[in-house]
Length: 116
Image (cartoon, rainbow, N blue to C red; front, side, top):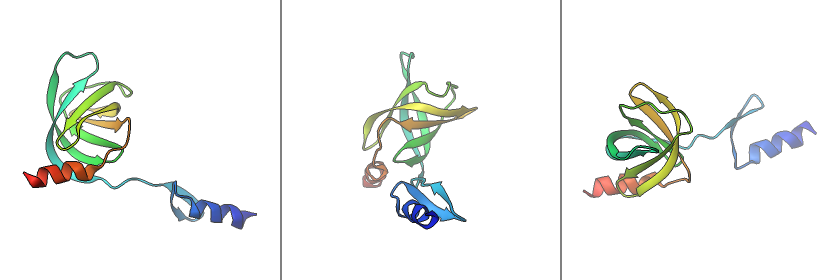
């Protein structure tokens, strides 16, 4: 029975590598970059310039000078993608993690920047 359970975990598309019988979740690769973007925070009447530090299909880390509670609604305008909706995942002084509402293709941002 254990071997069947182990085999189903190792074959799962949702699971990452198996280390000592423990399945670790897969982390999508991140694009390391330094690019400008525009951030709208729910409840604010203006956007603000931010700098994207890394980007993955599920989210982005930005440099910004504001603090918001995790779960706060945001929109981020990125080159090559336009405006993407998301939520604050975490926030510390000077940086914010944003989880996108739907996955994006980071290559569209990278390709837009390299085409300029």
